[in-house]
Image (cartoon, rainbow, N blue to C red; front, side):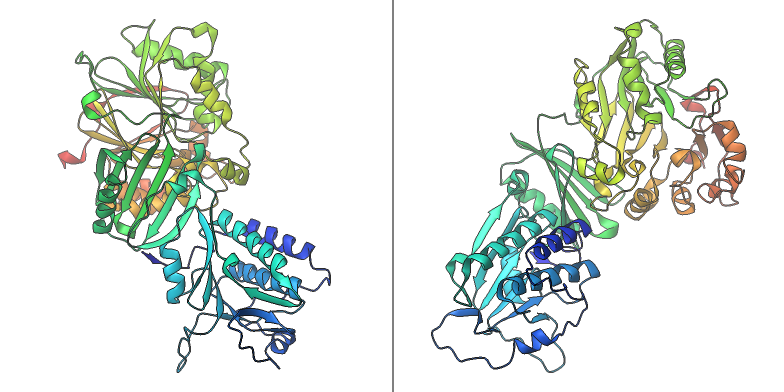
Length: 592
């Protein structure tokens, strides 16, 4: 298994740096400064530590004695500012214990220099030396560990949590082993700890370069592998079948490959993104929710009803609202609902009236699938207010809800609060299947097929500053037409989608990203190349937007729609209207 150090420590965010700096500073009785995190650290104490050493012939691996260091600490070359701050903290940890700043070198070898495998050194992180590679090849994704390999003491970790734990362990070792002015390494310095049950159960990926591991909602863990290829990905799928996982389903979008596996305890979602040579592997507990039903389980009685799409305008009482609500009528008379809009009394009343007007049985509103793009109130507010309103008790039957939950860690970054109320609310829906969406999943819903293109796990481990970047992005195909629903995908997610899917984004119709605000781009819409545009926005905002009262057609986020390159034939702005169109009347690229 190959490894790179480029992002392993990059994920050790400013939070870790502050934690480690605070930890080590609090114990610095001399109140010495931490030192500058530069790429060529030299100071008087380091120079002093290399002078006047004694000769020892007792065979012990001596780190420090008689006021001098007898080994270097080696870090990876080319570290970022945050990484260097981490290494500075490590140096200060040794100084805190010994009173002397240790020498630190990088793994860079200049012209004429050679690697001395017989020299006693401490290797921190993924250096390019063979001992580090050997150590990381045996390091599980959940582990932080240290071991002596020949004359190199290697300390390894993968993510923020394991790095912090490894540093705490190192401090404990230094404190407990600094005796009589000496630090001597022995067998007690070797250790291996694993602190994450899910990651412990993650079969290692053979090939590529391990890049990252991050957590999601419900204890989900995702491993990111870069610089890999389709053959290594397929070999991994073969490997996991020998380790207790069974095949569930697979899918291809463009040249990207997706597959789902399961065992008694876990679901695994495997994704290979060919355009960027990246694999993402998600492991999560079973029992919290369900997998999508397989194609053969999509059993229903066809009534031959022509499919339609309804865009519900969300202006009420003169107030401009930018929510989103789409209803697709299926061939058996049931519906797919996408978002639904705000939870106000007016919106709720309007939604029920629209569905009743579309239904062959107004007293029994059958929703085959309710898709929530993201957890902003103008998108998912309605689902809670209408399904739990006693006035409408017994009116709705909901077969399944498709959504994606943001982790508590990301919610802290976004400032979005706790989302446990969503789980509690959905748990009250008796007989409703709850499915957490993952990229590549396919939902067979009567005569429609909904394919998930992106969710938050394609964006992480980047730290989000807006819930919009967690949007579930999906393609709905029905009666030979393809409609792309990107929700409120913000620039970070949209950029990932463009790089991963490229021309596979092409669709007959598109819902404008984020009501026409930030998130859309020329690159995105040129790839989608829509003939029909659904615009979930009030007419006033569409015409004049906000200050400086610029019409939407002049905003950079959606200007491609109005460019000479566009083939758009119809733009349907939601306004305050309820618009229903037969799917058969939507123009299609197949007719070109």
